[in-house]
Image 1 (cartoon, protein in one colour):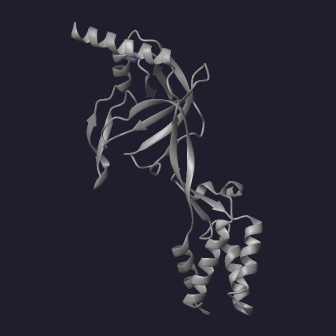
Image 2 (image 1 turned 60 degrees about the vertical axis):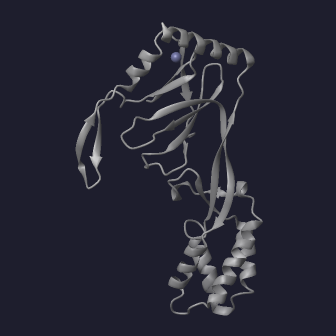
Image 3 (image 1 turned 30 degrees about the horizontal axis):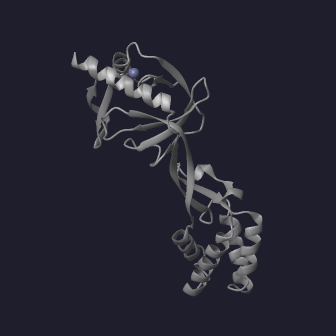
Length: 254
Ligand SMILES: [Zn+2]
């Protein structure tokens, strides 16, 4: 299991993973099965040497709190994890890597983060494409497709995303979340479709909506932004850190 150790004196930390003491291999993207060179790794030992004699504590990592600006499998990215100590103080662990081959770096932030929803989108392009594919025998006109998209966007504007069911398996990106529209919205959408589609066309669009509402192109895509809320240090803590930095400088000079 991963453990995060925090140096209380320096307010720095390190994630201890089972891989710290293993050599890391770099790969040539054209021959991914053959490692080209090994990099010796003992990052944890290095951390212990730097912070020898300092006060330290383990932080508990909060389950399911990992968020990142990029997809999970992207190696060069910045991610954030929530953690707490025994005193229940909150921390955000920022972990990042500047380029492939670099070790992961950590920055400890006192406070929390929240995800701010910046946009809720209808997957217009995909819907249009799907409508054209599935209505090949009785094609819809461009005007009908545009009218449907316009209607769907208008209906979605009335929705509060907080009330919708999340479909987590649709995205490997923690800031792009897919949601399923609720039954009331669905009913409203269908009722308004009667103004665009008549007779058989209406029953076809009704089938289309029921086929795609749960896991298809009709899902709504919400985009989020990570907002960090940093807790200001108390005066006492700020002073002690400043003193410590001074002491460090003096020691380094000697
Ligand atoms: Zn330290």
